[in-house]
Length: 162
Image 1 (cartoon, one colour):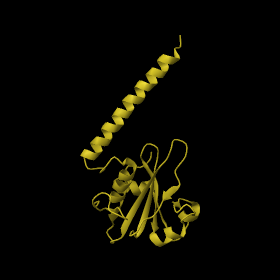
Image 2 (cartoon, one colour; image 1 turned 135 degrees about the horizontal axis):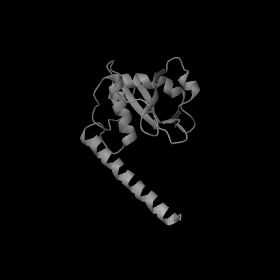
Image 3 (cartoon, one colour; image 1 turned 90 degrees about the vertical axis):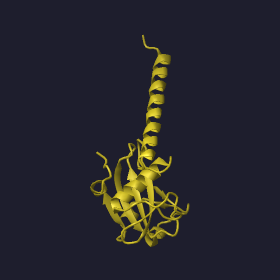
Image 4 (cartoon, helix red, strand yellow; image 1 turned 180 degrees about the vertical axis):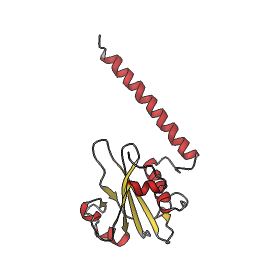
């Protein structure tokens, strides 16, 4: 006989176990130096960006940028993690003194799916009424914006979306 209380209890037990595993994985990633804080999505984006550019990350929370690429550009990384039903579109506010914004989309399971590299001046053209930049077809289609595939991110050592 189906017991809804037992079914709920079993689902809650699975959820608690999954959350303990998620927290343990985050602690392992911090211990291994893959991420630097408990801001998991942002830190993973910065790790993917550092691998993509082939550079080391500066200290965490550097004002205005997250890394410096091999050309000397200060790169601000914005990471957008999808929900199970839709991708995120709000890139956010762009801070100075960055030269380039690398917006990276992650799937719900944290795998990179695509990215766009936006010169700071171009990002400024796409600031909405809310003061934030959104990932739109018009932005992606701008001639100075570089679209980066999951495969290109993977070639740099970031694990792509399957």
